[in-house]
Image (cartoon, rainbow, N blue to C red; front, side, top):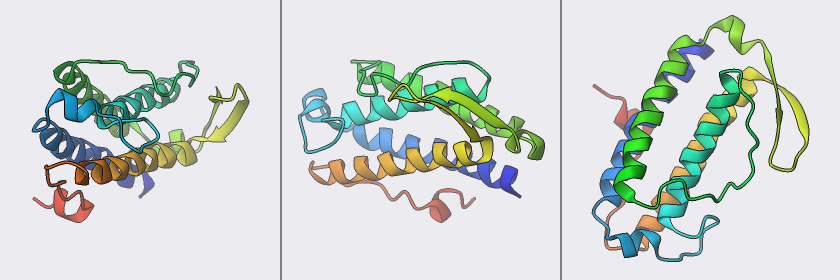
Length: 163
């Protein structure tokens, strides 16, 4: 059941990101990059952080090693480039979720966190964290959008996945 749950969350992630990016596309570059009271300083900074974090975790899930430093790195200054990268990453996330098995979730992953500590955690816990992290920061984006003239989209899971 956990595999199917993570596959559902991967699909939800794609739909929620599409809605958020559609809303953010209505903003000017100046509005998206305007400094705001947020951990990643702006709407654009938060969008970049989510993408960066997804890349870090997917690299780890795929057996690679990657440090989680520079979590405020702007991968893409151009919104259209960032959006295209997001679409590609969401495809990668769904493909990853479709490869999950009960056995793969019983493994553990050894990695170095952003503080330089080497950790070894259960894969099922890390995949749960991965999806929770996305939701956490999409919630921040939702709040940041309320500070603009754009109405934030509904991101309720049960509404987005309904056929």
